[in-house]
Length: 87
Image (tube, rainbow, N blue to C red; front, top):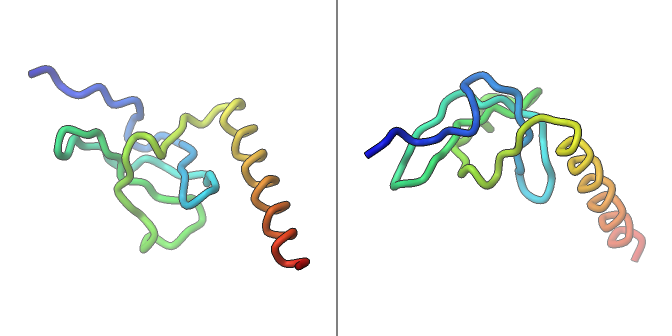
């Protein structure tokens, strides 16, 4: 069996989904659990009580393209929230 392919390095700055939005975070550790790659994430500016193991599908590289995606998700979420509040 070959070692797992981790797409993130420990201490790498990333974007991570928490609910419907992407947040700036740091990958603290990585491991394979039950055949799946998981990352231990610390959300930037959040209390360490929010640190959590997340599947690979919730983590994105920190780059211009994904920062744009983060911004779009925030704007969409903000617009939808304002619509609900104005009813």
